[in-house]
Each structure stands twice: as C-alpha cells, then as structure tokens.
Length: 199
Image (cartoon, rainbow, N blue to C red):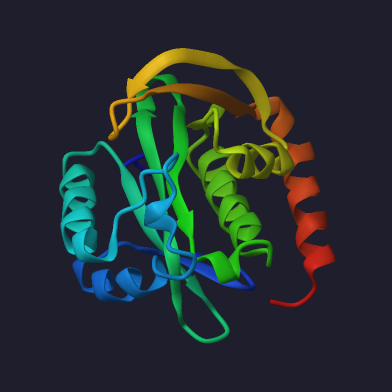
C-alpha cells in the first residue's frame, strides 16, 4: 500500500475517516469546543477558515504530501477533530503523525489514544515504517505530555525552527517511535485504552 493512501481505520471508540470537504461544517463546530483555535501555541484553524483548511489539506493529499483523517466517535457519529500523516518519506519508510486537534470535551477520554493506536498500527504493520515522528511546540505542554504518554521518546529540540503566526519564534520538540519499540508501545496503548473502559 502507498504511504499516500487514506484507508478508513476503525477502532472500538473512534473511526479515522478520510477527510472530505463535506466534513468542514462538522469540524467548524468541533473546533469551537474548547475554542482550540485561540490557543496561541497551536495552529488549529478557526471555524470561519475551516473550509479553506480542509481544502488545503485535500490539495496536499492529492499531491502526495499528507494523509488527513477526520476523527469520528463511533457512539454518536460526531466529528471530533483531525489527525494527519505528514512529512511522508516513503523511500526512507518514515513519516510524522501531527497536525492533530481533538475537541476539548473529548480530550482525556481515550479518543486520541485510540486514534494514535490506529495510525501507528497502520504505519508500522501495514506500511512497514521504521520510524514515526511527532513534533510539537515547546510551550504546548499538554501535547508534549500526550506524546510521551503514547510511548514516544524525545529525540531533541529544534530551536528557532519556525516563525510563528504572531511573529514569535517556535522551538520544536521532536519525538519518535521506532520499529523495534512498536510492540511495547502498542501494548502500552492497548492497556491505556482498557483503563478508559468501553467507548
């Protein structure tokens, strides 16, 4: 399977559904849950720019640069956010999981844990990745804790890596899971989901 393919990934509590333009209205509602677009250290689209954001992601997918999914809760079908494969390097069998946001009320419920389990399983067991990377803003401590909870290890900090939308400079924290770590990471994610109980 090509690294740029976008299969539907189904879990017990969430389904990762290939992003479509007609998801934009649902996602515009979801992003208002917690007003995620107002967090200064994130790049979450505002409700009024959601259609443009989805269209941009779909154009990047058509060009083979990203694979975007809508995160949908199985219990009620609600769209909760977006998650993406990016920095795809099929020739080196590696990619990044990122550009993820989840509605605030769904955070800490096992939704992101299962989404990452689905993505990592696809990356390592279907695509044959040797490494999967995660990146976040140095000041996004919640994101850093969530990535560490997945079982990823910190590789380092890329200082002064990005110019931010407000003109400040972003230090990027880089984490990864490598292929030999995957069985243990998978077990850890599975046990975390068990602790959350039924979806």
